[in-house]
Length: 325
Image (cartoon, rainbow, N blue to C red; front, side):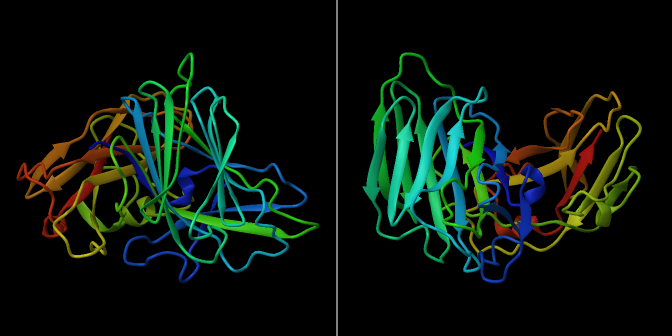
């Protein structure tokens, strides 16, 4: 399995805001979610998540979905949850939730309505996994709380391309007036099944071995990007120790990810690379290009580079995370 993206922090999602409502998500996994809102006056406002395209024909998308009790004036019928689109904007999947049903429209096809056992418009956290297979036809499978609720195929004469854009839609949610909200967390993009995957966040909480950037671990851990560390030279490093791992005690760890948010701020620079520091040794990730906009830069270690074996929860003790210009 290759994990291409994993994130909760709303700063990675244009138009979204942070929701840390008590009880929204499993606190042993995630510290934040991102929240999208809709209102009658602005029915077409959309939060967009750009995800890296998977290398291959199969894309898996996992997230936890929550519709809180604070909704007012909402109408579950026609709840357009999301659209999946290619990098050029071609519609691949239109995913609706309507009175306990999933309504989906595939690339070039009519709507297919399927009854599902647990309504997404109920006030409960739902685990959603979507599989997009473009091997020959386009085949979509949707799983709700690990159960298959939708499986449909559609022929295409030319491939629309792997999904790169998630449009979090709130069309037709309202009657008269009022607002509606939905929260999403544990967004994971991979090339194999994401069913049963979870995401535990660890954030900088103490200075690490390197402090060559202008700034410190408190500023780099600022989730709203109001502050941050800066570097004005090549080969400078900044590293931090992390908060303790808060997920379940299990050796079935799939991957360790570093997500850095970076921008050139209008200055021409080269790349950055994320790295792990374990037992006084640095393990560098691949070079990642940096643009003028604030973007997430993800590096994944599928195995522990120090032991060359699968990760264990005990491995996280003492690991530093860092970024080098």
